[in-house]
Image 1 (cartoon, rainbow, N blue to C red):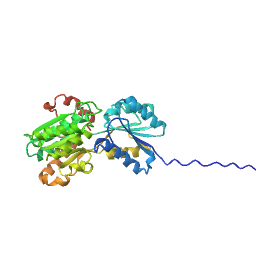
Image 2: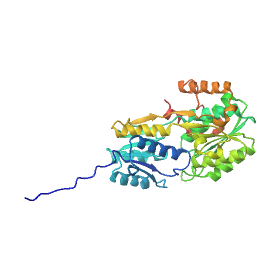
Image 3: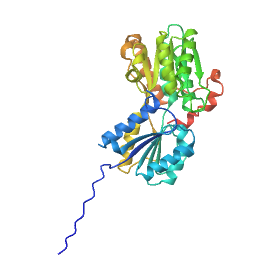
Image 4: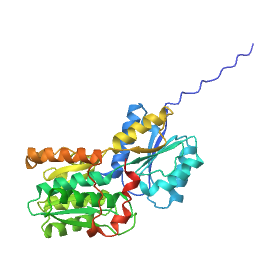
Length: 340
């Protein structure tokens, strides 16, 4: 009698395959891109996925046709959860989701005007985060001059940060002068230009700014380091930059954080169990701990910041009130699209 035997197929170790797709930027920017990647890694760890089930794709292209084609290739390879970096990828992410209805898509800073069943956009109130940072700057400045270095104004989150920062500083200190500088180049460079960021921060310090906030990815990293080297105090962004940017630990007051890491990780878990909440997902904004400079924030000011936070959450304080000095940036913020 002839006996046939077959080798059992090895079990696939990947209960999910997750790809983080980035148009422009670096995983080690110590700010925005790194936050999304850390969220992917945290989500993968919670699912106990081996390294082979997780991939970062840095396409170095602002052309949606380029990174959209890469998404198609990833899906063909079996990746079933795709996380895309930012608002600049929103339209292309939705197009990819329509091409691949069985794949879950998670987009950071991607407001969903219409609901697609397999897409969720994480949205944040940068005006709230900016307001808290501005209030902290306004109450700790000794010169009554504070600054903010920003990325591209065409990315609506950036004007929201600027408007919130300006309003927050003026809310606690009506006499404060706010210096704001936007990077006017295209998306390919405006968040990855630390040299420009450093020069902008140095100019602000020369104009007597003693607190500098930066919301500009890698560009902002250059600004924070330069301001710190000039003995100014700084405020980081996206996540606690005291932890990620040791060069500024001695001078960082706090960071205006977004819950990107936890939001991405939580949504990965939802996607894996087939319960992705399509539409918009509200992420949180808060100030990081004061760390080594806690002594500069009095108990009274700490209580004031907490009261401001509660008013912002309750909607009794408007962080996105028009700032005439910011001109057309007011029209580019689209605060209403991310309001709760």
